[in-house]
Image 1: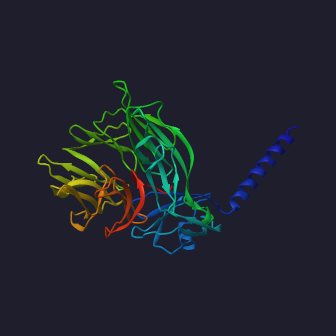
Image 2: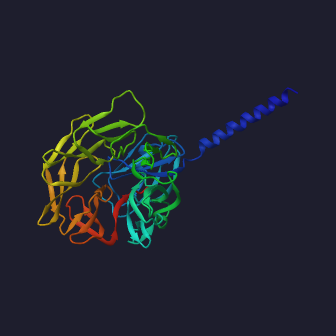
Length: 440
């Protein structure tokens, strides 16, 4: 009677050992590809494997078509492939993946396609109101939201996996909705690449609100500031990319912005601009006094561009580097209508404007981190639409603006080269506002 249980135990141990040996002899597998937003390069892709990989072997055996300067980061898995910062992409990349794991077993060679180029989305006037639409590579427009009487605000999630919008009904009340998107920026077949598909649509807040402001970071977290119709109903709700919700005990004096890399928020106060962590810490909030407003974040580098308003009505542009005092890049009597910067905060773009002879003249300038104006170009006959953002994307080195031709009211999406400041194209489709949607 005692031999049988012992025999069964030995057989079970042998089966486990055999299974372990079988698993150890299995070749590594690629589990998934995950596009990433980084400040150090044009684009980045994380490769998740079933086994710890030999990075040097993967780097040597893998081929990219076209052959672009790139580097591999990471120790085991995931490994990250980063396209160099000076590369401009105009088409999808073909990846021939190969290499060994750390046991010397080979990964089966396989072909993949990756298109890191962002998508252009715009709020467009349609019959019945307004709708958020996406422009495909062929120039067609496809809807990614329902139709609202008005859409005062749209924020693409930083991970490219959705958009949040504020929809306004005919009574002036607002609702906050989320449209989940399933990206198709990586595929084993080039024909399978395409625009993201809408997979879910749902309200983010119950009922209607009097106002709402939205902000997202590169992780895909979303900050929703809202105020109801009752006194004291203002709230700041953080909706994390993993589905968790957190109410923030903050009382800002205006719209807040999430830090691109996560972990903090820039909050306007009556005394200036405050940088606060999202989680309670013993550190005091960082404070920049004066009449300043956030102009743009510089990717995930920690740098930002501020616009400062002076008592004599002059405006200045300041570059903020972590741990340093703000550095003034520009000071003048022209209005600063919008700013943008590259991921590393090395290049800063600004639209300056003044009224002359009953019309506004807008000028686009490129400023270095030392404050030198390296390029300037008038936008005439176009002007930047008031309140609309300037957005730069590293993949194509293009600025995206919402432009209005002088003397007209309809806006258009304008694509501008980030170096020469030449207008590449003004898309001849009426819009309300255009933005980039990252390829998730």
